[in-house]
Length: 108
Length: 463
Image (cartoon, rainbow over all chains, first blue to last red; front, side, top):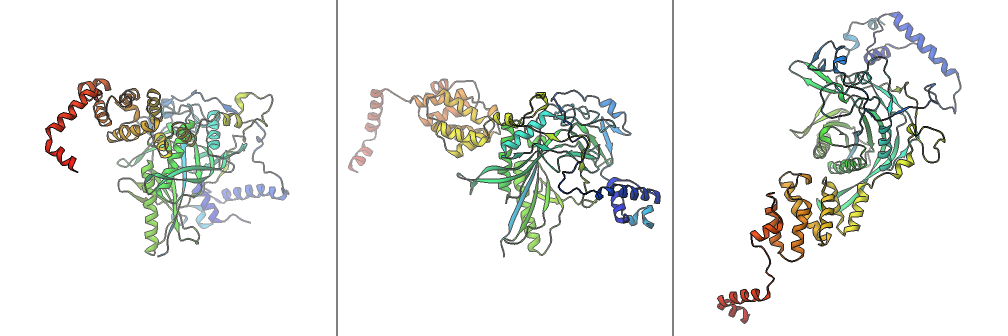
């Protein structure tokens, strides 16, 4: 079962990844196949595990102010700033539709 | 024309009242210099990890208990992914699969036909309460085509209270939210001031004909006060009814409430329907809560949140406070509503009652009619009242001792509002408002009046 171009397009929109070439798509295929092996195990009546940390204790922190106050350091990484604000484009710039953008997926 | 049944479901985000944020130690404070209350984790710098704040967990448990919820002893954290400039990590940590509290209820009261004397109690079911992070703030600069981002709010703890769609109009929505606000403020789990963004409400609205399936719903955002909530909901219900009656359709979209125009406007999303790709938060194990029975013997108490311990320490909720006021002072239920509705008014009333032998049922009239209406007229809060509870008590004492009449008392009160520092007694003396107590003097005055009006007296005697 191959990954469809619709799914690849959807993933590019959601995660802003670029599958760029057949190798990229093939890598994804292989990753899915690898994970699909999980289906070979009968898990009827078994609680799903989503982390090996599930039995660890979730540490609770006291409600004290211990950090912050480092505006200068944080803004050092900003390409653009205006009076201690980060600057971003006016809104999200969504990826153009499949037909309208220059992508390897077009010929897929 | 077949009747329409409106359906309203609310999603409320309440900012948790805590010193520091949900997963980091930076401060929670309204109005601070931009990006000054931001830790490396809040800015999503690589290598940082979330560390859960116990106070936030306690706030959510308190709120869940107050809303009659089942508290999940094991709840989970998830990542909700979407891109936005004020969400530096590209995802929000929330509780999508198993939230901290589920299946509760909120009782609230409504006046029938705007008559305070006819109140009904209604209930709205609470689907769940979940802990989640707040995002930063975006300031849109349209002239320079850019967005300025302040992350001070990013990571602040929120309780999202999801209600079932049991409400049917703006009035119900406003009443339910008002009661929730009072509960949160009583618990102290959130200060719930809408004007400061500590309480945000989104309304899901749809209409359908009785017996038919629910209609397509829209989500209404940008509601900044309880008054606007009622307006926004009622406007949207009307808009949908008109649209459908004109043969149109309702789009499943997000709409913003424009308070100036009093209408909702489409916020048509260029990106289409969002796919949040929920996944478990890999850096946080399940949150385990305990009660008296399940409490582990040798665990550090700082690491334990005990549901029963919290339950025992819940303060009296507004509904209980009202019942107690009615019982203790013999006032009417609708009086107790007004007392709790105004910040500081209950305290004021109780202070006056303590200082005067006048019956509480009489005092309440002075509080609700004279004091409150004056405050409202001049847009003052109880705390800003130029007439203190002791001053009012002094005045009511004069009235109670029959040293002045009720009319005179109102005149004195009018003087007291000026806040010139005079006591009621001083004003009474100044304006000669004392009731005459001398029997002989009173007889002389009455006789003089009768003597001066001989004709009228004869007419009266003749019938």
